[in-house]
Amino acid sequence: MKRRHLSIAALICVMMLIATAGPLLAKKPSLDAWKPTFDPKGAKYKLIVSNVSHPVIKGVYTGFALRDALWESTKGQIYLDYKPFSMLGGEVEVLNQLQMGAIQGMGVSSVAATNLGPRFGLVNLPFLINSFEKLDKFVNSGQLFDHFMMAMDHQGIMGLDITGYGNYGWATTEPVRSLADASKIKFRTAEAAVNQLFYKANGLNPVVMPWPDVPVSLKQGVITGLDHTPMVCNITKKFEVAKYYTYVNYAQGLFIWIFNKAWVNKLPDDLRQTFIDTVHTVCAKIRQETQAQEEEEIAKAKAAGIEFIELPAADLKTLSQKGNTVHAQYKAEINKLYDGDTYRPADYLQEVQALMGYGAE
Image (cartoon, rainbow, N blue to C red; front, side, top):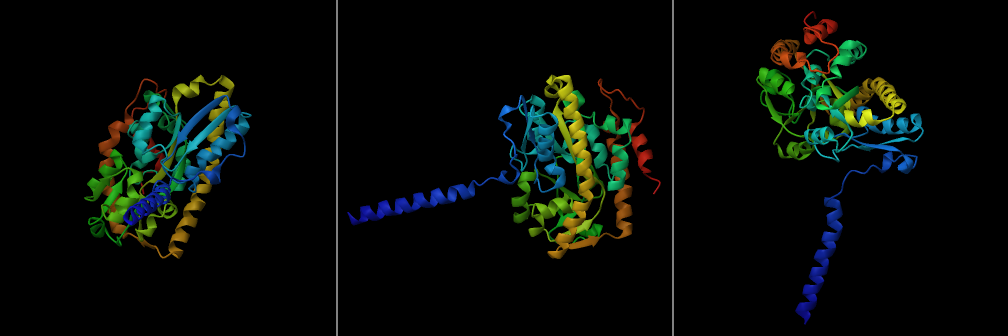
């Protein structure tokens, strides 16, 4: 009898441990800090929009800013239900959901966007649009930028605008002070052809990996470096493992705000125009705030003991020269025209290179 009581007591203890540990193990990011101040139940139109990262990043917070601005500009007719934190899965998976109409929008990273819109790879080309100033120049270029935003139109996906998340470099678990050091690092890169071409051209070791898999892989040493921006690395706590950051600044990280074209076109004409105008207004404001945020996050990381490293000028020149081969290799994808394209340049990449002064520096 005594033994039976002990068994029951032990079983109860195990059940209590499962009951308390289960929620902790299954804990998901909370959106409580970003709840809307309005009741969305009365909206005539609802869209679900995804992003993989943390809304503390200005470029990611765009989704919540859009939600609130659309509610106001449409007088409560459109409700944008925003799902950051990879809540709907990795980017390639979510792109498929968007194309099928299972969700209606996405703030997709420029590195993953090439999976359905190769032309979007333009902004990943090394040392082409690699500063905040160049990005502003590109956004304000008229038909060149408009043509860029048509990259997924043939897939039934409408590109409207962009926000950013800073300049790309290397967060690593050991210091990278030269290309020789970099050759020893296993760099996580996104599922994007342009980035992989850049790494291979320079004899480096890219490891293709969805963003949700990065934290565990970094801690376990499956990867020893990240191809990413200092802002993202600091906010998402990657610097807790990778204690070094090497400036490369070979490209600007972007979130491209894309939407299911059929859903947008089903909106009444006035609401559709209001929707498009609101996206442009919000994205322009967020872009202005992103540069300051990058500077703030770098300062915070330095204060926390992260070492920031400058590559020698000769190594940067080598990276840039090898990057020329990536431009050549990916040129056909950038220049490819589709039936829906209204601007039909003979050499789109060359026009953008001329605008940016590429090769003249």
